[in-house]
Image (cartoon, rainbow, N blue to C red; front, side):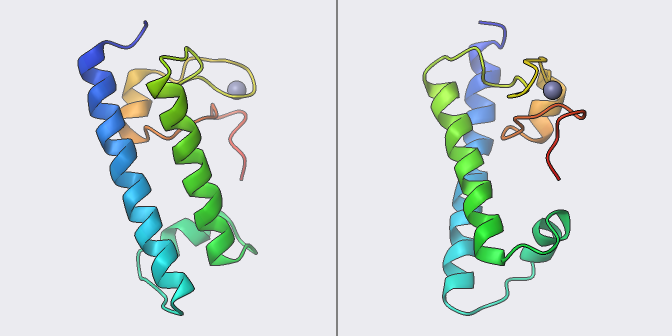
Length: 105
Ligand SMILES: [Zn+2]
């Protein structure tokens, strides 16, 4: 395991918090609201519908959580090239699944 258990537990907690936040935003959007926190997310994905952006973001969080829980070495690596994203970057974004080169805009 290249990430120590305490760090993994911390990343998992932040990952779950992100998932809960996204789920709340999705529920608000589906209820016809425009939560202010949504603007930053949407700015990264121009032209996509809010619920689509939120569902994709939730899928990404869930996929990361599954890898993390399975002790899968692919957690924290780029899904395209396998580069280790590093604990510092994961600390910022535990749901990261692409390196800078392969980040999908
Ligand atoms: Zn990559």
